[in-house]
Image 1 (cartoon, rainbow, N blue to C red):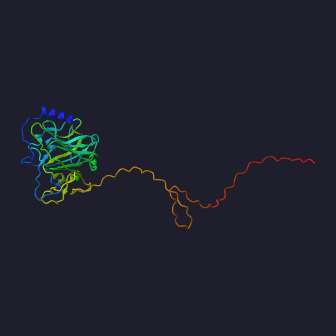
Image 2: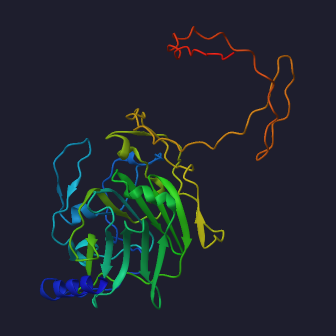
Image 3: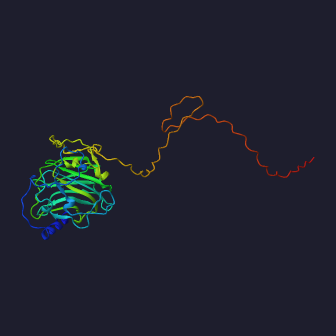
Length: 358
């Protein structure tokens, strides 16, 4: 299936992608990340200074149209075609070596088991440079990138990710640092992995970028999408709160004072899973009472109880019989009550005459 998508993408490049020259951007340089307009209330920590946020809004870059507004926050209409564009049209000056990817989506009943690219960047040969795959069948999220010698792939298999496929709105975040990748769901750190050294993403030439595309046929996956952002800061995946999942407006608690989150310097284990109870979401949104749940299924029948003890008036409790043993013989019962008068009997046989001979 990967080969089919790669071949489709290669043909698209040959016929439609413009042939331009450029330079490889391996580090964040001035102008590589444009200012990104976002609402301050989206962040758990409000700074004393204005937020200086840079990055890319992929819903704007791909010119997605908003669907029917049936909720406070509308979703985007993905259509049925392929969402593929030249990489230079999305990232003109390349991608920062460290970044965050944050998206809000929900799968549909017909696609909750699909395997699809949330985001992928190809090189000129049609090989993947970086990708994020959502696998509904295995209920995992895969992050892969080109290392210095080959493709490095990291699969996040935590059971906490299973809720991502329950057809409800969820926020998925990926924090990519120089040698660490962390995955967040609904503002909770799910798992953190050490990674190998990354090669730079080359946006020049006939390279392509795609989003929300099925591996099977290269067509857009049928999901509902609210946003997909790439921040040029690996800490933004952690700083975003989940107010958007609760309501259109929220107030964030001011707990941050203009300093960046501390850098991770200690050596981490290869896989670090954290319990879902640890949440960084500090937005003050009133929780709404949900609907009553459906009745639970009937329980299984209980096991047969043990035979009881013989008890007499005034006696203390005796030890119960052990399983498999017969109880003691009970005492004689009381005399029963008199029965009712019976029916008239049937007539007797005729009297016999006995003769005697003298």
